[in-house]
Length: 190
Image (cartoon, rainbow, N blue to C red):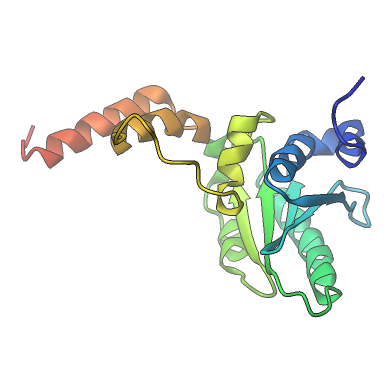
């Protein structure tokens, strides 16, 4: 028997919603009310709201798919926002893709989407996997900050090395970049 709420369970039936069910769980755990709200095309779409935000979350397959997905999802989210009555939200459309971060090339289409703030803001996340860690990173702007460490200060560069692979950066590349930065930071011209 599944432990997922019925509204989250609905996403499990769609191959276009691999990331939406676990995203709903992450958001619900932080106090969001989530609602499956399929687009007119039938593509799964997640709405999440709390006292501060209205968030639409949708998946896209890759760079060739993002423009059409964003257009349809933006219209649906803007319609929801216009029907919200006196409640005012900061509205965001979060576009998630499991496609490798290397596919994200900053095409003109992606840049146009990111800089379009008409009615709502758009956030694009690449290389997202259907696990809690990856989705917490993708949805971090909408989640409370984690409590401070009780074990003392954390070295930010070490933490960066731990976080980069989750963003699709090869660990060896991250370690090489950090070593080069430390060489530059120490004043060596190696």
